[in-house]
Image (tube, rainbow, N blue to C red):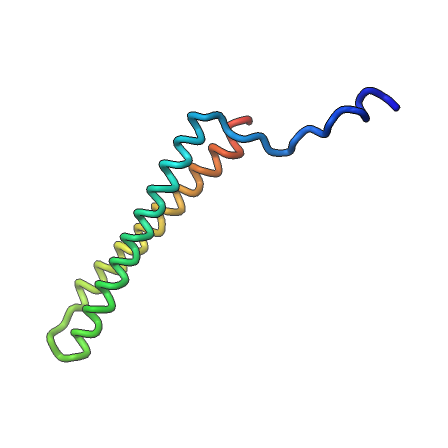
Length: 93
């Protein structure tokens, strides 16, 4: 057997350096906070829709604003995920 065949296989994925791990953890915490904000927007939007159905008044503008904010938060979450993936996979490139 040759020397190469006796060596352990090289891992396909190496863990990121500690400073990147800390940045990944911070981004994951940011994502959790953004998810909470999205849930809050969704709750407020549903409450306004319920109040509107009960005849308390038109809240179309506020509902639209909440839905826009929810989409913006979803975009921020996606950006955080891209940054995490870059730290995981792009740091060695």
